[in-house]
Image 1: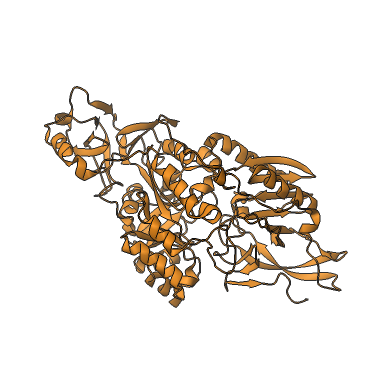
Image 2: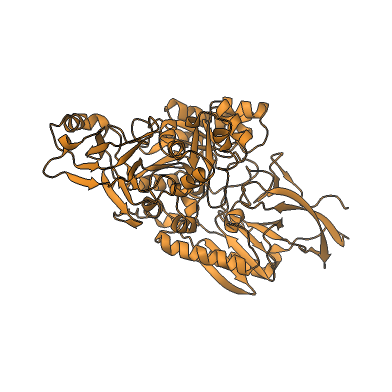
Length: 598
């Protein structure tokens, strides 16, 4: 089953007839204050819809009303375009595309541009196709970007599958593919890597958009080289200077507010204070887990936040609608309420607080006052997507021991430092004690392990991390481990770390928290070890339990789980862990765990 939209060209005769008053509309919205994002003004206009597309906007749509026309009385409320998320990963919600859509439709999201590179790392092109196919089944618009980087940093990690230029070329022929997913291997582009450039070329030949990911603070020659390579947008900015550099070089600056990324406030000043043209700025979420979606919202949350940061509501709305559509070459298809466009609209009584009172997608009311009114169809996910955690052996406490160099009583170790609400980590150092030849954490430093789970090698890479605040004997394990998605285990006790890791091997993936030899919570993610096909509210309830369990173990960081899941993301500075060892991302090279004695 696919929710196929008939094209503007197919429907032109009917749209013309309705607009001219020769045929009745399916739907008319009247009494609304129409927010026109094309002109950035509010108009007391009416809207007529036929076959899921807007046929007429103007002061009076009475000529479009027939005997069977459905009329919505807006009663003075604002009618705004459906919201678009310019960059996101469905897998980060721990949900399948169907359940993600079901979660965000009541929040007013009617279009998503998704990069399924999480599942690409586990299942390769087959996994991308599954995500693409379920996306096309939904009653809202979910466009898929073909993942570009699996592995994201060749030579620094091992993925379950590798994406090739041939894969990219094939995917560009699929109906729901809108472009190339974020080009995370920015050193590869900067140095002219033939594989990365071949993927970009295949996308450009198809006339589609190349997504960017430039996580380096360097805005000199390397940045210029990256932009010259073809990426058209970037969401990794964290400061006003980042936004300025991107738009001045012809990129779109994507400003994100996810579950753990708070990068809008620090960059939107480029518009609110510097006065740059806002049409080159786009709002997005990047990563939102199910708890955020159920409890706080989706793009409506980002939009409210941008307004709270001082952005004019109409400008902020453009950043979440027409700007996004234009960037992906879809300005004539969606992102505004104008003739020919998909009739994706929201009724709200306030442009600042943005209550989402009625959501219309393709001319159909799909949600009202927080209640979903349509079905979001599911794909039949195959067994190959459900059996993806292969540890190779039962792990024991000894697998998590870190042997000290011969004769040392203390060691000087490199430590991954977690930064609250930010994707980058710090490269820290600590002097740690040695007990019976094994290095122990102290002073807020606990252990981190990367457990290989794709090829059943039984390999475990160990290191140290600080910033979570864990206390007592505990461990948390997750098969969501961006981007290679092995298993990350963080803990203060090796026995609990082994219990947590083995538990995820037993259930086929997810997140589990252990304390004193007892499981506090388990979030099952059976699809690729990344997603659940259970309803969002059920997954969110378990995710809330996970957060509570982490807090019970001493962690009070905002959305600490998101920080946990990114500790193996070897394309964002400064220090990460992979199945090949500790990674210095500032230099893009493996580094030793132990430094010189101090």
